[in-house]
Length: 155
Ligand code: HEM
Image (cartoon, rainbow, N blue to C red; front, side, top):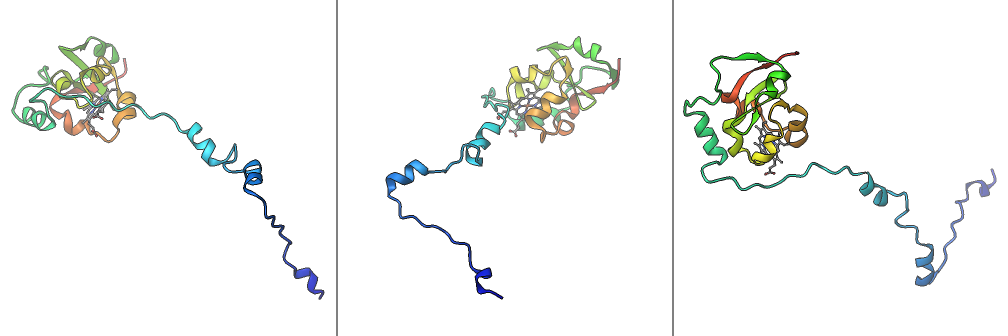
């Protein structure tokens, strides 16, 4: 066997000056990850810090929930359609549906860590998507158990 078959490919080294390096620089490549990733990164929903009124901390909410106060405002659990929900979209009477469950949000409005205004975006509608986009890790089953008024059903 001819030893030349195993010869390593020849690599050309050039002792270029710094000036030349600048001209031929290929980093970052225009379509390389450093350039493309920031363009492809989707904007995350904005998380706004809101100052809650004194007496409206998460702990205060837990105390209110456990106080026995009626936070539902209805005598029994019911079935509600989207049309029914639309009738409850004011700050004094705000309902919404999340994952098939209907909640009376009214008592929680001033306790919501994201602020009343944000929470009012859910009022009178199925807010599942909105809710999941902002904080899918939050448990309505736990936080709003005492505000549960019924189930969302098709019209
Ligand atoms: C309907 C029931 C809802 C409940 C029980 C709820 C509960 C909470 C909780 C516990 C937090 C604090 C989460 C954390 O810091 O990790 C929070 C934050 C927040 N919520 Fe909600 N939320 C609800 C609906 C909504 C809706 C409909 C919106 C608006 C689209 C919203 C917007 C926000 C925002 C922007 C924050 C961020 C506040 C921060 O970073 O301090 N929430 N919510």
